[in-house]
Length: 213
Length: 345
Image (cartoon, rainbow over all chains, first blue to last red; front, side, top):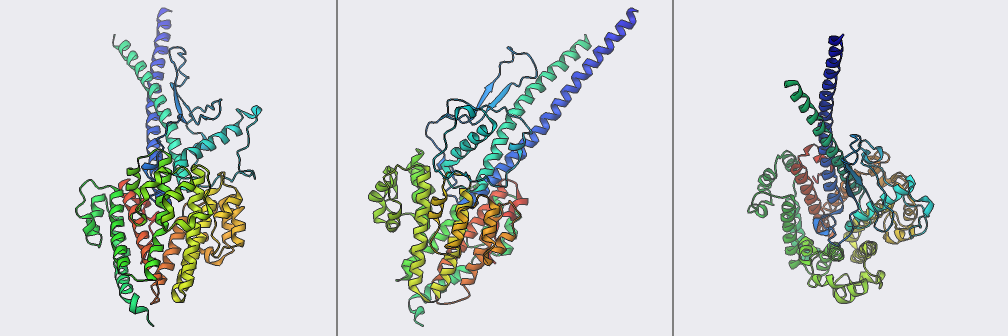
């Protein structure tokens, strides 16, 4: 009786260890895939930037046009306190994108790898604002936080960040911006994946030490 | 009959310069280069050789572009010093576009608190003038005009955009396009006054330029705060698209609507037929190819000033090709090199 219970416990222990090893291998696989995607997204972004420079001219796209005025960051990184929430599902890092300096409320979007809108490389152009007014329409309080409002805000912040190159910029420059934006999200995913990878590695190490004792 | 008295020597010079443009075989060699040093080695056998031979390693793509541009500037200055009226005025007109770009660069950079010296280094050499550094002190367009531009050839173009509004990104963009519109219209009128083959050839080339600008302004303004009325004001008052095409372009909301407008005009059908629906990436290349075709045709006739304009533009296209090839080589993206290279011969 005791030997069958011991056998059951050791079987469970082995399956837990195998599960830990599988988790570790999955994490490594996911990390390598993410790194590869990041590399190809960055390559695409740099080529699109060169293409925009080719289209608009070197006098319109060059490093001396970067804005040196003090302004709040449009995107910030939030580091989550893992000790407060030991739940492994909670990501270590969260990207807070396109927080508007003009709007008292911030719009948070968690970086989600595979998010269709941002991974889609937009070759099609954005539609012109159908408003006949040249002024930006005031946002009504009840619409704050709705998905359409978040998208509009993100779009406005994107245009604002490109304004150093002029207001009428080539679609290639906007495509380049999207590529780098996607790369930024991937970087955060890579960081979160790396944290999971290290956790899984630590678990496997512990299991190996237990096995050798 | 009497063209050769004053213009014969320079026409011969510019035709000689034209024979120095890179050929398809040169481009094939350049597209196979693995590094920027290889590009430098291949260019050493061309007319760019003396300009690049003393450049130290490691080379940068911007260095290659700067040195190629220096060659163009030297050739231009040689022609300008030898030219008499009205050819000298014609040659000066060719540089006003670069002058406008330089003015906007300085003003935009100053708005973003950049150092003036850094900005001056990025200016195109063909567009430099004496008081350009003073642009940095202007707060609005009135001051821009009063302090600096009143003594430059751009002064007449400012009457349409002088306001007391402070310079911000949108106003600068409108200023850029308004100045360029006024310049193109002025150049067009000047060529019409010259008459003969110059008027005929330059009318065609400048009309194409005006139409291309209208299309680019339309596409680039989609999704921005630029209203339809403002957009319409930026289109030139000549060209194949003027006036009905402009009316239709101003209300376009995406590339497919732009396509449906342009396909009504036979010269532009072939350009847009190369693009798939919803796609605009290859539009620039298609326009450049059409422009090169028209510029090369300018050399088929003699005794006109269009050859000078055509040569300058063909060299600029060549420099754009060099820039693209260098970027593809530097970024290890040689498979994309033919995306934007436009062969001249």
